[in-house]
Image (cartoon, rainbow, N blue to C red; front, side):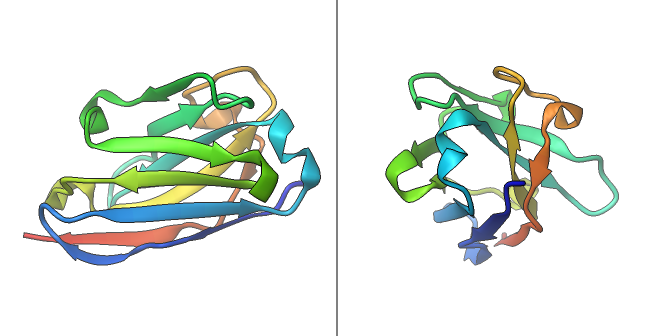
Length: 123
């Protein structure tokens, strides 16, 4: 079973940047598609970005396209989310997740989840 631990969240002003990291416990990390999701208070969890096991394919949600970049380092068992030009509407708890099911964007297609890291963007 893969354990995921997110880090890098915090408080940032609008227009600023943060980089989230998600470290996985297993050396089999490279077998998983990795995704980032977020959940704002009173809202459903939403897809942010995903990256294939090799890192050769990545996909961002429309709401973050051009501002967020997902990447991974399989040698370090870590996936990253670089967030630039942050907006107040990006405020949420951010979760990383691992999937064995190809290249999914639905939360129910992910098998393992981290506990989340809070990102707060002040306007």
